[in-house]
Amino acid sequence: MAQPTTTERPTSPPAPHEPPPEPPKPNRKPFFIAVVAVLALVAGTYAYRTYSFNQSHASTDDAYVTNDLVPVSPRISGPVAEVLVGENQHVKAGQVLVKIDDSTFRSAVEQAEANLAAAKTGALGAQLQVGLTSQTGGAQIAEAQGGLAQSQSGIGNALADVAKAESELASARAGEAGSNANVQAAASTVQSRITSAKRADLDVLAAQSQVRTAEAGVKTAQANATAADAAAANAATESKRAQTLASEGAISRSEADAKATAAATARAQAEAAHQQVAGTQATVEQFRSQALSAQQARREAQDAITLARAQLAAAVQAAHAAQAKVTEGAAGVTAAHQGVEAAKALSQQAKAKLQQANTAPAQVNITSAAAKSAQAKVQQARAALDAAKIDLQRTVIRAPVAGIVSRKSVEVGQQLQPGQPLMSIVPDSAPWVEANFKETQISDIRPGEYAEVEVDALPGIKFKGRVDSIASGTGSTFALLPADNATGNFTKVVQRVPVKIVIDPGQPGIEKLHSGLSATAVITTRG
Image (tube, rainbow, N blue to C red; front, top):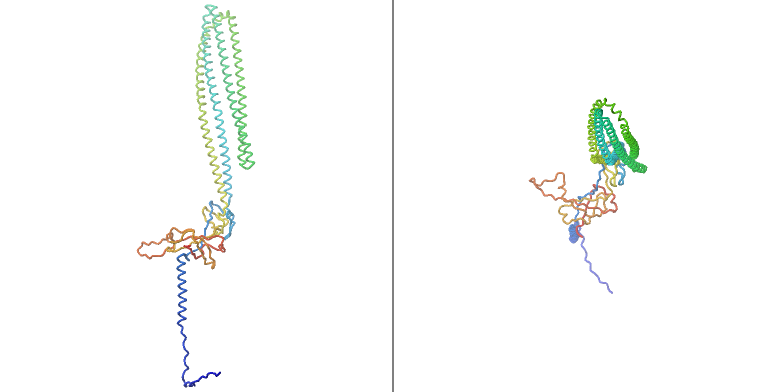
């Protein structure tokens, strides 16, 4: 097969000194158009995504990490004895931080305990006095009534003496007239002896009245002894119980000793009361002996009547002494009347003593008031002891929360005052973020919405959290020197509102969050 032939045209050689022809320039318009189109697409996509993101999110870089700061300060004054923590040391809740010298406070506790023991002893004595006054009041009234009866009996005796003196005067006058007739003198003498017998009868009655009065005194003494025994038994029981409580450490040894002293005193009072019973019984026996003597005197008076009749003849011979006996009898009558007045005065004294004894209920009220006052002193002393113990406990300053010690400013030997700042503790609780959003951003922010936080000090780590709360005012509202927009010149400035974002616990790196770190916060305002 024949190959086609081509006709080649001869090229003319280039002309000398002529430049070579320039190559053709490429057309770059399509490339630029493509780049612009891509850039426009990227910018539009970014703008759309930014717009869409801003429609459903709110973000700000005006945010920072914060946490609680718990101050530690003393509540009492005193020198520092020991500091047990250092700066930036982690402490547990309740761990001892600082110890204050407690010697003065221990002394105050011991003094308060002694005061309380003394107050309790005084209250116990006052209470026993109430019981004693209540028990002896009736006995005092009975005793006063017995004294009144005895004084009235004395008036009867004095009247009997008056009758005797008048009888003797009549006898003397009868003796003066005895010379007229021996029979009349003898009869007068017999009558006189009969009167003497009657006087003896009165003496017997008086002695028997004294016996009854003494027996009433025995009953009074027995009542006092019974009351003293009851008080001694009660005090012994209280002492035994106090010894048991003291051995168990429930009360102090001084209080138990006070109980034992009170029991010994009560026993001594009971023994004294029993001795008084014995003395009163001896008085009863004495008065009984006097009563027997009075009965013997009455028998002798009966014998005297017989003797007077036998001495009828001798009466005539005694006529010359009758005048002297008349004078003596008159003096005896005067003395007997004076005895009646004295007996009446004793009766008035006995009535006054009875009136005084009737004031026993008022005395019981007075002792009861004293017992209440003593009990109030016990409460006051107990309150003082509690206050002293509280001050002693406050010499040991403990960590209120678990966390990190910071800003420690206390040293050993330093004199502390109540409220003086010693250190601060940053708690171990999760920190939160305070994000300041523009006022145009907070319309859709609600508590509970999801949030993400990036901290400048921890790049690449995003912390998840939730909106906890929104401040009730803008930052300028709570500023030390808030802006005054009513001064004439006004420039509108977009205000910022603090929003509290709580970081979810347990996230990696959360332990590296420290108060004051700058952060960026993004809140998802729509689902």
